[in-house]
Length: 244
Image (cartoon, rainbow, N blue to C red):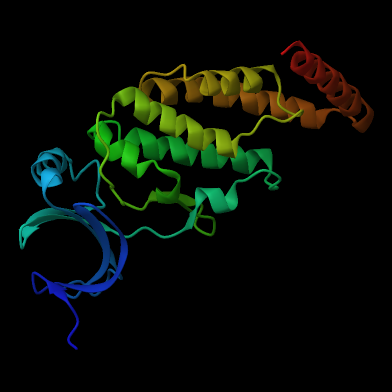
């Protein structure tokens, strides 16, 4: 059986997912020897015209992973480069161990990703920011997007900011070692205080410096002093939970 080709160019490797009027395929671009694989989002039926319009708004300078779109046997094909890395949920989870320096570094990478999509239609940016699409390459210290753009409707810029905030909260969970400024920033993330990714990123640039100073000051203390501070924070947190 001959391999399935799309446009005599993309050799289908596997179907990653499917739902009504949508499918995601992994393919090899046989015209490009330097690129291993591509992702092809296929939209049919009610999604075709809408996603043709949405994908036409993608600026390739702002989204270099976008390889273009075309019609294929009554379906719209939107093609993207395939990113590498592990999904964020496999790397950051309750009980994981990362230094605070690494956590700040990866939070910055995720927010840079979200900022790079600030001009995309929210239906696309929200789909891209789903947890299974956020990939982190820990060897290259890089974050990327798996462009599985499942159909989403009635998304707004605020939803993009909320989804980006949720990803950052996985990387920066509340701990007793978090100082006042870090706790304040985390509370803002949890409250959904940002109405756009641009506003979220602007607040992060301010908060990151303050968080770094707090962490460095805490690390500079002797063991006994750090212990007293952690005990005090534990009592304070226990009191707050009791009041709730």
